[in-house]
Image (cartoon, rainbow, N blue to C red):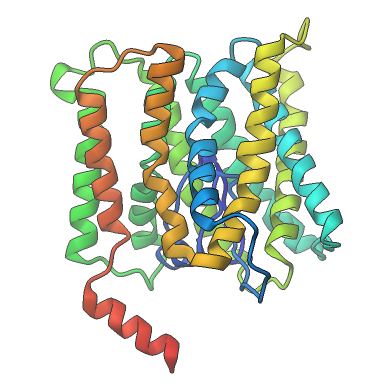
Length: 351
């Protein structure tokens, strides 16, 4: 899934994972773990209405990010985890590079900006993408998708500590408690976590934690940078690709072949889940606003679970979907505001 860089705020899926934070998420320090994972959303300018209705693009984005975990699982059947991550980042960077050329975007300037982007690339791309790929060697894609849904919970918890303007409220604290209760339900805590691969699950949860760390860093360092969101995101993906390209040879050997299905899965994961998905999300944020656009977060684990069960034949016990629903309910609470707060925010923005 993916994230942007205005410090406004969506993983995933994957990121991401892979998601670009929407404006509201940058305000709360939360977001999703789907998308590319940048962390900065730029102010939207006037744009022509897209040919496709936003609901169709919203559905496409949900499907792309929801299927990302299935694609990771298929990719790891033919390639080492670092190779899956490298192929994903290469494909995603290529898509955004083409978009930058078409739109005649300029690269960000300044060594400091590139340094901050390198750190963002590590926490929002290189690290979580690699962790999810390693995790899915031993855990089902359904569990990885549900772990990804904890990113808003981690984000809220971290923002309460790291961002002084994010003050705890009863609603948000209740959301955190409910969300982590859902995590324990998914993991089957009352059974002593029996039958659960601890290392794989831990890596998936760490990947989900990495996204909000990156978002908070971006918010602190790249806000008001002046470069476009697309230029920042494309540059960030390029740096993430370079990081994995340097690390991968140290831990893996060159693949002996290029099996068709895993290769197609990795290319689709990058081109669609890390490239096209970012462009779709930008368009949604501009057209319907960040609040509606970020609702895609709640569809990702549902689609990931359905895809894993229907396509890969993964087994599903009752506590997995029940716990996932509790996690999503908690995440929704952490990102909601009381009516009074919304009204005050509306008045402030209109002044």
